[in-house]
Structure formats: structure tokens, C-alpha cells
Image 1 (cartoon, rainbow over the protein chains, first blue to last red):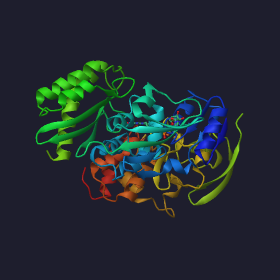
Image 2 (image 1 turned 45 degrees about the vertical axis):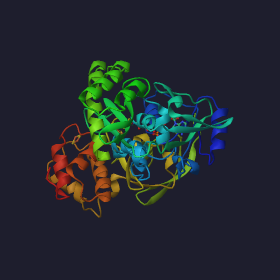
Image 3 (image 1 turned 180 degrees about the horizontal axis):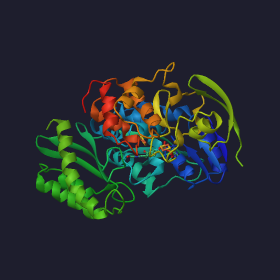
Length: 282
Length: 157
Ligand SMILES: Cc1cc2nc3c(=O)[nH]c(=O)nc-3n(C[C@H](O)[C@H](O)[C@H](O)COP(=O)(O)OP(=O)(O)OC[C@H]3O[C@@H](n4cnc5c(N)ncnc54)[C@H](O)[C@@H]3O)c2cc1C
Ligand code: FES
Ligand code: FES
């Protein structure tokens, strides 16, 4: 195996593009585990550790750009992620446990595209956009276009995720993440990320995304629509939860059967919404 | 065959000049090159925490860290936790509370607890449990481990 630590994204792209079976390594949390287990043996590893640009956070009128190499721990402490942007901060602070939050990066979470992880779910709820550098320059795509299937992204050979934009979102909205796991710190059985805005006791904005219930984070526009203009009463939550549950395609695994996961969705939705309302003080 | 890479690693305050293949994990280098065998190898997957070390003061799984990525970082292993033949208060508390049986998990637990207490000297019991979520103990269970650490913070589990 060859190994390189280029200092610029462009050098990294050139190296990745020129070698077959090359991979970049971010925190290594999942990549090294797969190498240890003999699942992959890349011909070349391109480390992202020396690319300073990937560690920067920049605020703009649109929102906050987070460098791909930012560990979950840093995202969890980032106070500029407030309002509806707070959904990303909330997820980063809850996922796994402190040692994984130290190692795992936001870019690594996007590129791993593991349907049982939570950062992609929060990023879809935040309507995040992803900047991708490749042999033909840079492009910015909605997070949904980057996540295409289980463990599969739309990144082509030689491409690197450089940063992720968390847009400011709806004025006055709050963001919240709720995970349900059998054991605290384990991968969630189901997770829910949402952004919510209320006017009086009426919901004026809702965007709900469910994790661990399909190949990519599950977002059903009809479920959001069912909540908007409602008072988020029991019926409203049950109906929206039902729309999500019937669109879900969860797997059976040690953390829960598909049926159990479907049953959890409406329950967790109700809990997530009431926690979010508490945050919004309404 | 992998290219070997020359690098210097700072472990417990000392610099070590090494030549390692890029796929070698910090855990392998600590145990096999530096003979620091206090750090244990359990699962090699980030699931058991036996291999925990501190990197710049933060707990990190050495089995998931490639040694070559850790140049210029300050690595602390269990060997440096005891000071001048005196057990660290965390180690003493674990012994006093009967939280140790075979001890395989203990280096990782001490390291994880140390990182927590260094950052937050008065964690709640929930925070202790959550921080230790990365560490598995197969023989003594968790109640006494949490009790031992809580005894250092004035918290009651
Ligand atoms: C024990 C354990 C428990 C976990 N529990 C949870 C949990 O409860 N919830 C949760 O959400 N997650 C969990 N995770 C997953 C964790 O969030 C991921 O391991 C982490 O986010 C991956 O990030 P990384 O920086 O370590 O990526 P790496 O492991 O370095 O890389 C992962 C993949 O992405 C590619 N890649 C990385 N960065 C880039 C980039 N910038 N551009 C292009 N490709 C890139 C790599 O080539 C590789 O294929 C857990 C992981 C472990 C090991
Ligand atoms: S050996 Fe590293 S976590 Fe188990
Ligand atoms: S004391 Fe034996 S594994 Fe914990």
C-alpha cells in the first residue's frame, strides 16, 4: 500500500484520480476498521490531515460552511449552529460516544453514507449542500444528491468532499435530533432529525427526516405538509408518522426488526416534535 | 508490499524514530515496536475500548488510528498514567471499589475516565456512563466501575 499526505486538495485529487483502488482517509474510524477486518485493502491511501482548508469553518450570509475534516466533537460545540442549523449540532453531540466523536469527521460521515448513522440524517433536515472537488474542478450539490444508496455516494474517481454548507434556514425555526438506541452510544435503531417553526400554537414550517429506515435518510414531503398548518395534535403526529412509516424500508438487524422500526417512527416523531417545541418555547 | 515510512512519534513525552508500513495501526506500533503492552488489543474494530489512548488529551481508539497520521501529536498511554510508582487516583478507586477482575479492559477504562475527568472534573453519573460507552468489560460489570469513578467526583450513582 502507498500512502500520501498532500497539503492541497488539488494534489489530493490528482493522486486519487491517478491510482486505481485509492481511498482517502479522514478520521479513519470506519475505514481502518474495514482494513483491520480485511474487507478492503486500498492500493493507496491519501490522507486529508494536512489539507488545512478542510479544517476551516467560515460564516457567510447563506450559513456556516464546515470543513470536511471537522470532527463531530467540534461540530457539537459550534455555537454558530443555532436556530434550525442547530439540528446538525444536536446530532453531532449525540452520535456514538466521545471517543468516536473525536475521530469521526463530518466529511467522513457523508462519504461513508452508512444508512444507520445520524449525521447524514441531520444534514438532510438542515437542507445542507456539499462542495465536491474533483479532476474537473468544484461543484456544489444538495446533500440528497451526494447520498445515493447504502454506503454509496455520487462521488466519482478522484473526488473529495471539501466542505458542507449548513444554510440558515427558516427564520425563527429550531432544529433538533432524537436518537433511539437499545444501549446509549450504540448505533441508533431509529433516529429523527427535524427543523420546526411555530406561530402561536400552529406549525408554520416542518421538515422531518428519519434515519436507519432505508438506504438513504428518509424525507417525505407529504409528511411535512401534513404537519404544517396543524397544531401538532395527536392525530396530526400520527398521520404524519404513518406517512413516514409506510414510505420506510428498514432492514431487520440486531438493533430491531423492520416492523419494530416502523412502529417506532410515529412514537419518536411525537417525542421529537414536543422536545423541539420546548426548545422553541412554544 | 507496502512502502515503509519514516516518522517520529511522541509517546508519553519521548520521541521515537520509527519506520512503519502505512497500514500499521498505532495499537500495533505501540505493542510490537515500542513494547508498550499496557494498551490492549480486543476487537480491532472500535467496539471494545481496550486499546484507548489519549491523543492531544482526547480519548482515541489506537486500533482505528494509523500511526503515520499521528506525527506531531502528543500520545499518552496507560504506562504514563501512574506517577512515580503511585497509582493514579482513578486506578486506586477502581481497585478499592472491586471494579477489576481480569483487568483486560482496565487500561482503556482508566484512559477514558482520565480524559473525562481532565476535561470535566465533576461529571454527572450520566456523563460518566456516556463517556464509558466506548469501553466494554466482560467480567466485572459496570456498576462498580461507575461507582469508582463517581467516588472521585463527589457524585453518587
Ligand atoms: C464503534 C463505532 C460506533 C459508531 N457509532 C455511530 C453512531 O452511533 N452514530 C453515527 O452517526 N455514527 C457512528 N459511527 C460512525 C462514525 O460516525 C463514522 O465512523 C465516521 O463519521 C466516519 O468518519 P471518518 O472521518 O472516521 O471517516 P473514514 O473512516 O476516514 O472514512 C470513511 C469513508 O469515507 C471516505 N472519505 C472520508 N472523508 C472523505 C472526504 N472528505 N472526501 C471523500 N471521501 C472521504 C473514506 O475514503 C472512506 O471510504 C460509529 C463508528 C464506530 C467505529
Ligand atoms: S481493540 Fe480498539 S476498540 Fe477494541
Ligand atoms: S475486568 Fe475483565 S474485562 Fe473488565
